[in-house]
Image 1: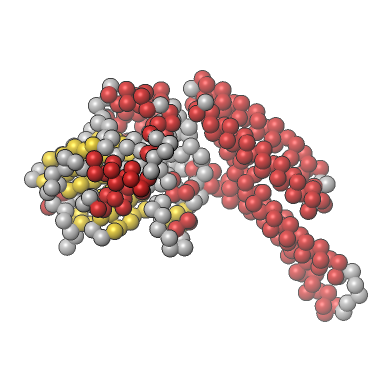
Image 2 (image 1 turned 90 degrees about the horizontal axis):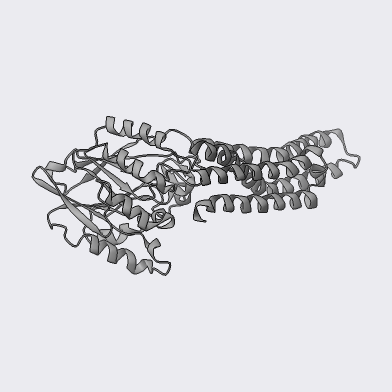
Amino acid sequence: MRSYFPQLLFTALFAVLTLTSRQLLRAFLRAWWEKPLVQRAHKWLPVFGLFCVLLWTLGTALQNYALIMLGAAPVVVLLISAVMYTVALPLAIVIHALHERKRKSLSRPLPESIIAPRMNRRAFLRHGAAALPAFSVMSGWTGVAESFETVRIPNFTFQFHDLPPALHGFKICQLSDMHLGYFRGLRDMEQLFEKVAAQQPDLVLVTGDIADDLSLLPDILRLLAELKPPHGVYAALGNHEYYRGIKTVRKHFEASTIPLLCNTGVAVPVHEATLFIGGIDDPSRSRRTDYSTFFPQSVETALLHAPHEAFKILMSHRPTAFYPATEFGVQLTLAGHTHGAQLGYNGRSVLELGGSEKLLWGHYQRGAAQLYTTCGVGHWFPFRLGCPPEAPMMVLEKAS
């Protein structure tokens, strides 16, 4: 049933939004509702959406990626359009009410010097009421289009005062939230990995939510292994590994050459230095997990055998682990999960533009410890506005 969760969710949301917009139009914008085009749209778009959901469901059942995309893409466009349209309607209603008030005031005899400015304001209100929903819907379409953009590989430099000289210039590629099987296929990953390999990373770290179609997991693990960076590829668990079937996930990892680090770690020699790579579990393993104790305990367990002099990197699917990681001497934490809340501006989630630090996307620092939360390669909800898919490449440097 979990494989069909997006279809069920999208159908329910679209039904609620369609009914809501219908009632708002009939109650407050009767003149709009009486237009035949508006009524036909509210009648036939839900029918078309249901047809596309059935295609999407059939594609999921047959594990046919082309059929999935044929059904899912129109559904997402319809849903985003419905969201933006319904959100904009209340403001359009207010503007329309102001327009009607102006229209009634112009029915009284007034001097020409007063009528002309009022006519201009009335025209602005009339066109503004209609333009607002249209602009909102176009913004929604832009977000859908951006979600299908080519995955970019931004390069970042992370400076540490305690970085061993042997690790100066060490390059790490982070891959997270690929969600293979929804809106990213194996061919997409092959193209991305070719670009990653061209930048010659020393290490590749995968921070969870690899595949939503577990039949594709062995193939993606094989492609990851073929990257063959000098110091290996390591992976950690995400919540979708539990949603899809943790036993199957573990079985596929055991058959691959890629270590799955779950509350454990490995010491990797890099010339004269030691790099310790730890990975923690995801709290999805238990529905009653107390996050305030889960992350400190998981971090402590993962670092149990870390050499004191080692430079420590922690893989945590959720950025929440960053705070306890700082207490245990982890220099760099890599996380994903948040997708940047799907909305970004200037390299930060819009939910953080007010100054609050929610660790949703980007580089963060607390004392000597640093975190990078990536907005991810893929998604199960294809909407990204100002928050493009990414596979960050990080270079470690010794701070002067």
